[in-house]
Length: 274
Image (tube, rainbow, N blue to C red; front, side, top):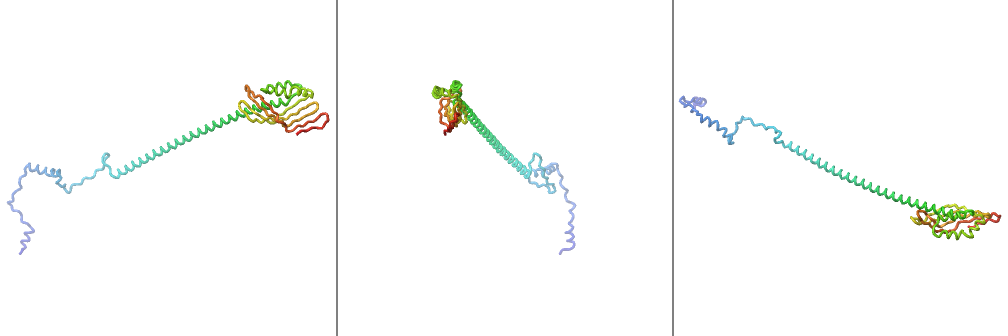
């Protein structure tokens, strides 16, 4: 049976006996070994730091230290965006350059075509102008000759012949002398005939630098001491050649007239021939 004395003894343990031995003296070598032990344990990784030691705080990244993942991703995205913008800019520059080259080529081609068209138009205009001038020369020569041939004066037949000779070439004078010389000249002088010729139209058929042909339409009125004779629309076919820069008559053929009227001054009836 446990008594109250026993409970008291358990609650208040007995003091150690007075003859307990004092702690052993500490030598300098032991102290040094004890001081070095924790450091060796920490270096070897076996020792656990004391629980009340403050955990080291994470240092903020310095300018040369590693950057957080979010910052790195952001910078990588900006770099990619910059690269894409640069690539897009290069593509735009290439497209604009190609368009500019195409525009320059088109403008150059247009300018060449316009120049060629202008040159062709100028050449065509020059040819037309040259041909027009040539036809005017032929027309003028044929008209002047027709007036000299069908217009005359009995008082100056030799002058008329000389004027025709200056405008003709080849054997025309022989033909003229056969038609208007000899007996015909005597009749003209006897009747005191004078003739006036009016050129109405000149049609230039074929023309080049050396030869030409023309049809001349002439009205003629012949006055004599006995009658007045009117010939309308006489057609002369004339061949011309160019000699020393001057158009001359080579051949003449009378094709006929549209109408002839004659009024006799001695009182006879008027004669008309269609």
